[in-house]
Length: 64
Image 1 (cartoon, rainbow, N blue to C red):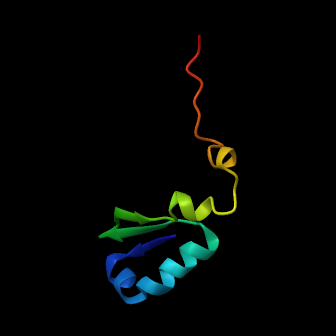
Image 2 (cartoon, rainbow, N blue to C red):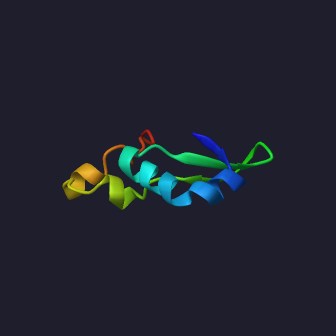
């Protein structure tokens, strides 16, 4: 979801709650260009997971 800085100021708490509930990021724009992104923290999305499950998707294969 993209939203202008002006709209973000007016709906800040609502947008934070939406990101918290859905986990989907919000891109904040100024004059059509992205200037910031609001996304859930890694700890918020990993709540309830075991430590090794939190690492899923973070490894890279470097080859031999």
